[in-house]
Length: 432
Image 1 (cartoon, rainbow, N blue to C red):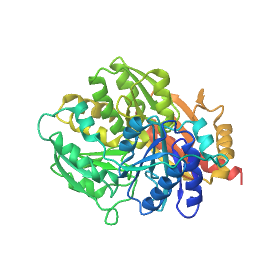
Image 2 (cartoon, one colour):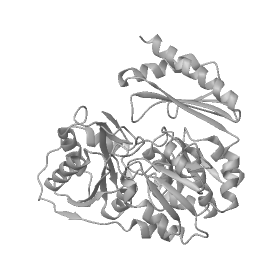
Image 3 (tube, one colour):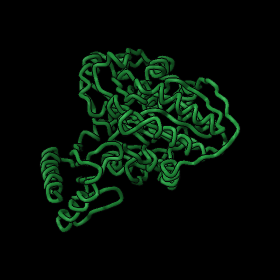
């Protein structure tokens, strides 16, 4: 099981069981001051049984439950602003056999203090029984107020990967004036896995021939990957294109995770903006946004754009609408051309949770002295020069160590990637 501010997740029936769900849901109910909680699930086969368990537990704990049914994470977050709390049943981009809980308080993900209570000793309390309601969201109309009617008729192909985005994305894009084709709208027949950042997206690429753009979502629709001109874009491009719209709207302060492309930061600074960095993880970005009074942020590695005036989470649905509204503008291509000058490589090495801390200590020891600047805000980040960096960190969601490398030279990025990969392997071998 993986537990972090990014959510609780595991292989359902193996390391995430119904007793776990009952414990976490019961403990979470102690945080709900409003006594109201929105619940939703993505399309995973185990979603319905977990949804029923969560609802029954919350109701028994005296919480009124507002059921959205199958709905993406951004909708759950949006509705949780109104009701005070929410739980999305999902493990986001993890394999289908996984599932989990994303918990929301006051429209925001859990912080470390909340998480400690949720996973701590079982809280037993008596209360009156709550009630159950079935609700629909006004999400589409809320997004349309931000985007407005767009000029032209962009031709969009969306690949929902059989996920919860199928219930809303096509309708939104059509209502703002796009010509939309949907592929992979059935989970059982989907030609790809749940994570669009790692999948080659061959069907989406072929389906965008002669069309303006393609969008690929993960199962709970907080991640978004863009396909343009027959090519899958780096997930950082999603964040970069969202930034363009934000600058257009007059926003100046931005927060990005440590693993986000430096190209976006440089573009913002050229336009007179300011960039802050946070730990990786949606909740970490969101908290840093509150601290720095920034309305825009995100994680390049996950194709995640956060617009806090609307939602305190990565919102792939909103972002698809924002990008669609800019396709015909010069600034759209300006950002793409700027980002193409930088080359980012991401990779991962399997490493069991019990070994990760020791491996990271060994990596730091092996790196120390090689470079002048090493940051430890989140994992180990090496600043090689003004255009080149390396980040090595434990994953919040999988039994792996992640690495990210970026430079203005593709050859330099590739060379550093190989060197870093060997360094991690050697460090792992040193502890065995």
